[in-house]
Amino acid sequence: PIDAKNHKKIHYFARDREYSKKLIPNATFCHDMSFYLDLKICLPKERIEKGYFFRTDNESSSLLPEIPFSVDISAVGNEKTRADYFFQLLGIYETIYTDRLHVAIAGAMLQKRVYLYPNSYWKSKSIYHSSLEENYSEIKLIEN
Image 1: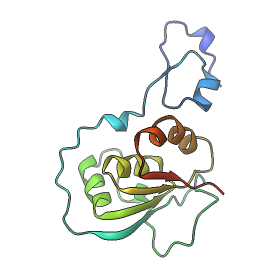
Image 2: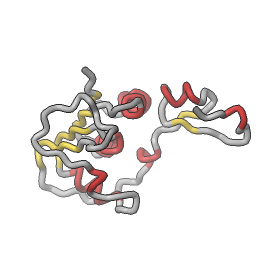
Image 3: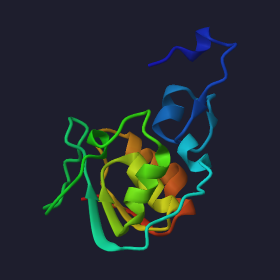
Image 4: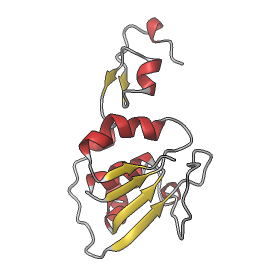
């Protein structure tokens, strides 16, 4: 945990109202910065019914469905890859299944139907309850 008491000159922000606020209660809530992207992209006209974007690392969901074909989006690009390529890829699909938070956020921003599976720790579930649930009705958290 961060010792926020010893850093009084630092203003902390939390992108969730649950777990992060327990760590640093005086942090100011702010939606994940990806929500503030200016989406001026041309989406493809072709549509595929379902897209599966699940992690293959140790943060993967323990609730994974049987997946016919899945893309771990982290293998397709990195922090230097243009964001519009990411949105164009997701824009092809009508429904998105994922355990990656930013895939779910991008899908929600594109007004796609999204099924978000929680990852192996608190982040996805907490940010879903803090930002996605109340602002994007087409996204559902899958909990079993």
